[in-house]
Length: 334
Ligand SMILES: [Zn+2]
Image (cartoon, rainbow, N blue to C red; front, side, top):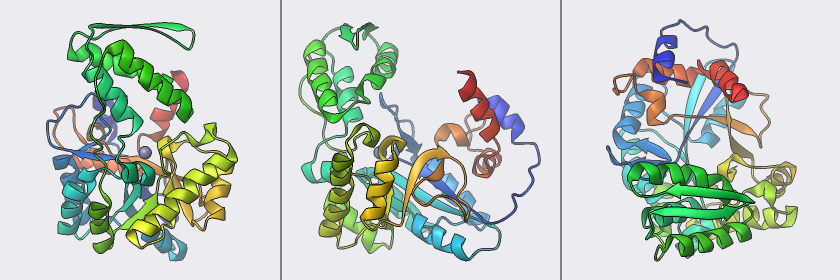
């Protein structure tokens, strides 16, 4: 959906929804302004700061997800906003935490406990590293019975190659590892990227500042592709590791990539979690299923007007869910 269309629609007055609702904002990384990594999943520092300025000014200083849910249980009406960060990148602590504290705001951080422990970069960073450091100018690869031909000579083509490669890596961990290995050979790229996730010492600062920490599995797999036993090991293992390292037992979880099934829900409930968040779009209501809570992404693109300036009106329209039906229509059509 184009930015112009959303900008025009943000002018349309909205009706307030009946009953209380909690909007859980979904963030990942916080990038320096102007950073254009090959695989970008996150928000820029100035946009994140502007979001906090706006929310505080309209009386919606962000809460942790846990506190937001506690508010919802006793609420008769109104709106609250909770902030959440998936994966546990160090920039969340170095850049996000001071900004949150300056705004007297709070947030929940879902930590990929196994990768943090082993200091291994997540698969998408390892994939981007290979494409970025390719020692060849073209990739020719038979992948899942399909011939993939991708030029790599300039940044634009490397971005296109990354988009073409991503679906093949949404696989079980063994296949993912094998493909990463094979791709490194084909691209003649050397080494592995540094792990940019927070260290446990950095994550301790989150707890010391009264932020919520939640689980995000050990190794960030696509849960629904794993057996119930392996899902259980990933989920329970990450809860235990976080408790062991940070002295606080998570009560919430974010499913990696928003991917989950009935076994994931059962594992969360069996290991004492109270809730889990997904990547489905929507608001949380008193009747929402506790282990399938929706969230709302609030990326740069969602908050910038057609001239590239931070737009309070568009940001508020995103939080209100003003574009939901249009996005749904676009998804059905594509
Ligand atoms: Zn994640």
